Image (cartoon, rainbow, N blue to C red; front, side, top):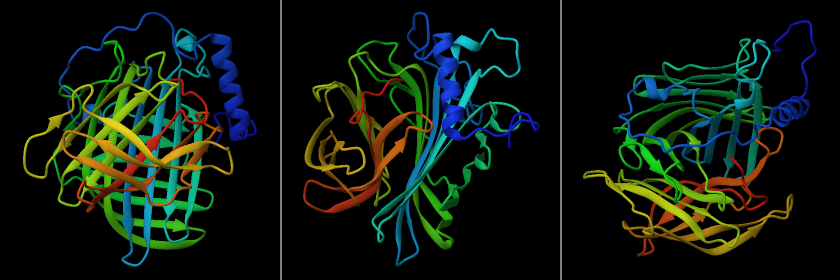
Length: 365
């Protein structure tokens, strides 16, 4: 669907070039003016499941592991919203004041293949919407909605489709200090951030016309910010892991061009017990095996030892080739894929997603 019925729909590539040109002309790619520290505030639901258009960047992110009993899959879906600062004062209804991007992927473990698609549009005209009242996102025919403690995702793509329902089995996990998560040495480098681990998952995944009825577990993240990365940071390494015993592990680091941690953090919530928020310096990522993409020639660590206060874990990619090329939407090339979590005594204890950005080119948000 196009904003004006009398105009032909541009390709994703053409639309992206037009939007980037608008960025350039307005001088707004990285935002303007000073960025101040975010104040502590109590997150409120369902409101804070919805969009926060006064903030520059925001994303909703669901990853998980599901199967049929004989077939195993990973899946991820992400909606990104960006506030375009340079167009806020424009009166035209065609001004791109808010942009919505989306990525979706399925990892077929048996087939050792990643299926990926992407979307981009400006908010408005019924093409892209992001409610401020609750989680209700639409980008053309892709939708992510919430009702109470459940979520629904329908994302039909070119060669695959995701049609899943997610039901909360645990309380919301507030990252950082009651939902205010520090991301760098400056107080302004922070985000409001909550997670919903251990989501009971059911529905269907479709690949090349073949439908698989699946069940499994998922992880939801929702984060919004004015400034996420220190100028010396080029990307991050992040894991969100559902442990088999019901625990939940988050660990991340932002790194510089030499691979050193600019900042690190995360959390561990046992199935029964209190949430522990990691302090700066308590998380260490050490790569132990790498893989080189034949498409982009980028090298990614696909096996890590991740030291946290909870344990020294090993994180292993289920398949190596889970690189996503999103140059037709957000412009980034990154690695994001289904991975297993192993404890320090060599026992597989869970699974989830590993995300690595800034390895192909520095990431700028």
